[in-house]
Image (tube, rainbow, N blue to C red; front, side, top):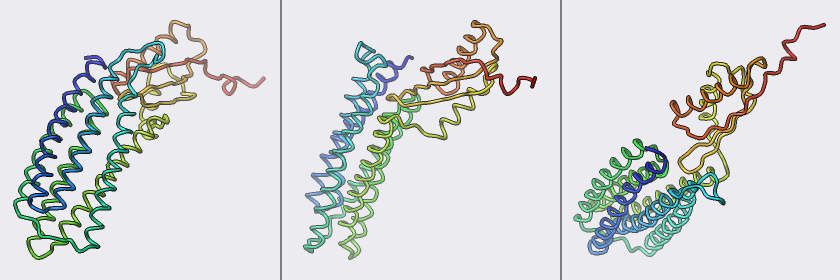
Length: 296
């Protein structure tokens, strides 16, 4: 399965998320207003933002499948990252709105005890999102798709949000009506935190940021390749779900062009086999022999 086929498989996870969010947001908002649960209403709006975010991921995945062209010689893989960035702004806007509305209701003293049935709705939603998380996590691991990994994390956070809403609703039944709006505040905070995490990872990737520890791991793999004397320089960046590597290796200056080319091929094959990295640009230079030359 090539990169484009893997992205096509990732669409299934995005579609499953969209379907689940549409159904659950309708149920939560209806039940939340009917049973007077601010936490459940906030959770429903959270799922509405997730619909938009999942659609953005789906659009990004489809654009990413476009092959390289004159204007995009590296392909369109970064469309996934741009879509995630847009989704983060939408999520942050809704999260802040949930927090503002809840704070206003607290100051106005509008706390009411929600119907216990709303707790069962929240728990049902938590179980559903747990199942969606499990499905998307397995699919993301199988096809090694970073966008779907992020979607799966969002699914898990939604399951936890629904669980927290249920806890707040149940607590309100024991003479603590303020627990429900407090749970709504936590939901808003989680929405904003998820939006920030997506925003940070997206902007980090778009500005060619790369994890230093992972870069050291890649460096160690290249250094272990037979024939490589040292690494003069190595850079890596994320391109959608792919990693692009540029590395300058130093070899024995007595090697022929054919032998040096063989070392480059071995590095490329090793990076693909061990780290699933398809794009490695290797530049070979002769090792500096000044330090090892005998003093005249």
